[in-house]
Image (cartoon, rainbow, N blue to C red; front, side, top):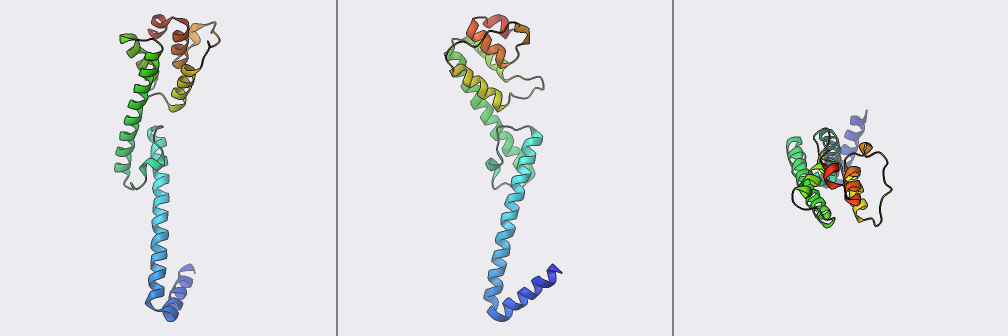
Length: 168
């Protein structure tokens, strides 16, 4: 039914405006199709990023890429660059807290290690950054065995128990 109505609309355009009207309709349709392709690529990118666990990459970073293999390769490259930038920032933050040498490297590796082998997510990194910037001392924990990841690092940095907590 919709095709019939569309055909009638085209016939009417041709009769009243000639080729100019048809050309305008074609350009409108091509523009709409292009917009839909872009929207579809954004949805594909979002699904790819969720599926691959690339939390530091946004679908907008992959704008203009429609091939899934190229999209994945570009997303992985962006993720790698951003993780490296976070590592550099973490290293700087720990260095400002007084860590040096092997202690510094261990703290950075501990921060970015996770049980699944993937890098720490953006929220954990932001929480650590906010904690390091905060002034004062966090409330001490009574059971150090309950501290994991960034909480253990922050506690160790603020309470001078660097070696014992970082080696666990």
